[in-house]
Image (cartoon, rainbow, N blue to C red):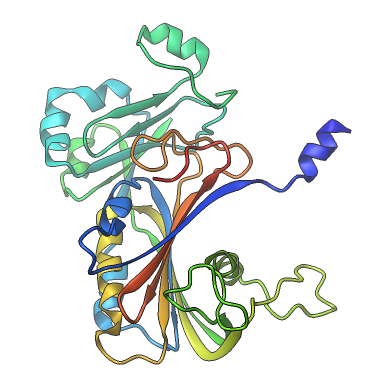
Length: 321
């Protein structure tokens, strides 16, 4: 019975919401993007938009490449040649692929050269290294992302493959959108919706869930929060792969200037999800899978340069920075 009760419990998560303005010199937006290292999905939603500008489309198509290196010995990441070629330039990220953070040995290389090892008890004792116990109970191929074209030649003696992120573009018609006011993070009764309501709504939109709460829909009874408005069309772009924070910064910067020209939409969103089995979330904060493995953030960018920032992790992770 106790096991059944645990299975029925919805996974808990920690959600931090804050608001600021991109023109504020104390704004943390750039730092928080740059220190969320391991990103596998980036999505942006543009209400009242039917087609991407050429500049934005080019940014989307230039988010790769990344590389798979099979059977790479760990000592290759600490050789003087590797450090000189990649680490000193601060442009290399690496993460073990197809491993489970709560079951397998996992390795992550941060762009500052720090090597994060999440090891099971036996492997840890074999290494003779000094470490500290994981806060999560239980504890092959390396995935790399780098801006250097030398990656293929450097690892040529191993099985290495170059990959490009997958891009999905779609237009959503007659989309019911919550009404938002940039100054009201908690919403205002009958005037605007809360940041938490928007967060849930975005999850439904990205999952292509119906928002009408139809009585014959046995999959979802979710409906758009109120007050809401219907937009004739909205453009949805999703990029999936191993995506560098630097590329996300460029996308965010472009969306910051989206409203330089007059637009019908009062806001747009940029959402980023991290790898579920990454050993860290932000910076060196330890991350565990638990029930969902989530660590993600979302920007709501308003036409007056205000923004909302929402950051979420699993309940056993450290609180987002």
